[in-house]
Length: 389
Image (cartoon, rainbow, N blue to C red):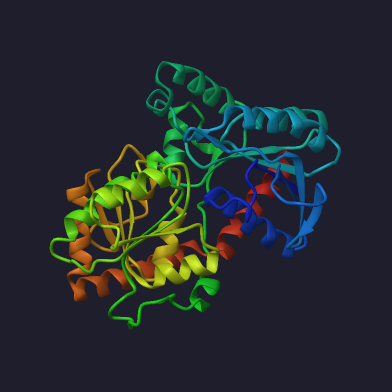
């Protein structure tokens, strides 16, 4: 098969679950003898098109800010969509897979799909539906209408979580037109990475970090609640160590909050980390906290599980990550409030036997998300789409 993946953000220049999924699927499909092309914004220096890890990367437009005032840039998404059409039309593909958000690129993919008479697949990392009103106020009606319009574009849809599949059905997409194929992890690679103890001289029973968070520092991640929870925990655990991995528009405000809360010595802002360094830090932690109120999947949750680290996440309408955690077994699902987060963290870091049981359960759960198994399902789905076209 000759396959095109379309998404404006491209790994490793932009790090996130959607970017990682395309990268991992692409290089594995390539190793199986398929020809893989990725069309995205040109985040790199040099030629617009070049070979990378067995795949061909196409930079269809110059790099622009993905976020403006903490929100996904509409102008960036529109420019990418406009520039995408002529670039995608230049070549012939057996199938085009487009990651739905931020929507506009789905329309040129559909146009090329019709012109070239090839199937298109929409990969849904999340469905916003009425969340658009929370995000944009009254103007959210436009986002909602665009999302519903996109849901009508293809007979072939992939939802990366059961949570997203259910919400997609709520938009009116028949269940038989949606394949649930989750994100995955490279279990072998993760198993080979050593814990990153850094400056702390500690052993496995006394981890370098009590708490770790990893993700983009945007409002929806609610990292402010984690910092407030650390402030509460400090009373009983004065030497508590929390590592915040990631960057984003909220970083400056979060650093100020840590200072005001008196936890500067307890919280390390580590910035974005290369994958090996991130996994090393997770392995050197007792619990991962993901207080996000909106997640399409929550890749870092299964990465933590593969490290044997239990997870605390929150009960929120748009948080698909809560579907990955079995409450009280491999972590906890709590209310979106700092005291609830702090109580759940204490249950893990303050109880060695519970921590061990949760760690073992997490490792067992991770076995369900090996990329090698997931790529088989994606390949079968793509082949079926081509046959039916």
